[in-house]
Image 1 (tube, rainbow, N blue to C red):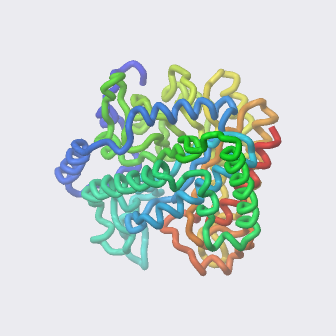
Image 2 (tube, one colour):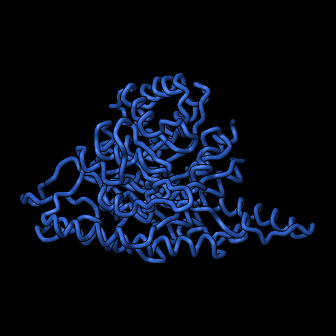
Length: 448
């Protein structure tokens, strides 16, 4: 792969999986051309900043928290919805950094997580075969032929909604909302009365005392480190036409960056060595993630690492393992040993969601909180045993009071799932469950 010249269109000469079957290619080309003329969503300097922070994660000097919706919904691009998700990520980060004693890199699955891979191009709905729902950037979830028709104008709409999301994220994180003296304001109303919410309030009170002490002794608390939060965005990069359209050459370095997000990841279904996704992303200078499931081949993963990070650059590549609580002990140790032996510089992150999905007796797709926590604990223990760094976690989560994952402090049972099951794709942790995990992870961070 490294023997031919890369360009932002060279991927078009490789097999591209998980791409919609756009009915009108001229309409598709016009949508890509429109997006290519629009401003970038993020900037090269911000992307380089994230890469530097991930280099700190790789050596254990920081911890990566990546989380957000399974698939963003166009109708949820509202200030309250964005704020609620941001709030719980900020809460989790402050718990891990204050109680765990380590800086946290905050990376949202936001402002572009509008496309989803599917196992088949079509699906049966009420006895009718329809094109599969591939996320709001491709088609609508309504079970009609018209709604399921892939519409390239949805990519254009997705760009503008991602732009609106970025705008409000910047306003919240840089405009005072993320200031550490507002930690009490981040607590969600439905969480406050829970044991996790009360534990969080006690931690917030300690932070208040620390800030007040700084003021009392004359230290300046009106500084960016206390008044603002660094927050980055990411999404699974599926629609290569959209990613190509937002790939720009940095005027200061001459390097190419995919300016649709700070970090992009390649999914389990699209990480073929000779595939279009690997070809495209080997040439951009963003930090990249790759999802690795239990059916991986170690030699193939080695070749992927070499293709995507040939210079072995710190912070460039994050391997996001998604094995499941019952398979991680078998799959992770040999993979870690093999890559450590090669001297590869990678961030190790744990996705404890996808490998633990099952269908409850009620028919709802769900995940068990206990399984999620068990996979995280095993992830830490394996890395400690192998002398490598457990660098981060990757969650599907929401700030809403949903009932999609079983267990947790409220002990959501299968018969509770229907009470507020909102997801259009995969089940997400609610804010209370997310905080509970944050406290558990903080304890693990304190151990080493």
